[in-house]
Image (tube, rainbow, N blue to C red):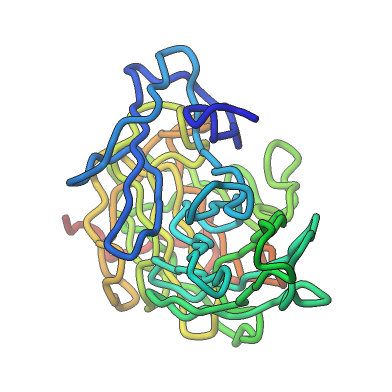
Length: 321
């Protein structure tokens, strides 16, 4: 059995951190154990990741195998790990609950493998839509033999957005001020627009610092604002806006420190959100713009149209901070 400091596994290794990262264990008033890199009152240090061994994401060993209660994190199509499965241990067994800390709904799927001495387990994976900033109980498990421990391995998959919503026709105003600018890579571009997430994206070359505005009204559900170079996020600094029809506008490679909207903020089309940059896996100053939706436990890009040609007509609404 691995020691407690080794209860984490690497999800993705992208770049080594410049400084050591400390992992803390925290037990709340309900006895729920959680892990993270932020110190909280009462937390204790259980592991230190040294420079040169960079970890972008961590996953706890499934709670069903821990000696006590604890959460299970999982990879997903959500921009970060703010969707998690918490396991609450009580006298009657274990209650499995999903916590969604995002400002957008998420679709989740819970499956249980390696069952031993477990009653109440579903026969098939449980799928559910968890509203923004909410939690929901998915299952309660009890031991068949109360004198023996339960054994199971929970697996949580999730994707940002509600797949039940259908995109509505919409022509997007150009999401910048100034120009005209040149389209350097369009849909199905062979350089980088060939994956489901980016197949229908466009790259628009523009000087660093060009004002970027929201192409459609919605709720800001994710921002990144402090990346200086290519790592750790390939998309660099970014803004993701959830629209009423469940689609999401995504603006990538933004200038460091330029993002001026906050997660949870409702904004209108034309609202200044940031300035263009050259961060992340970018080969030159440009804006990467894409419209995505949850197609069923996967976030993929979808076709869209601008309200005017990109290369031919300027956007005369120049200026603004």
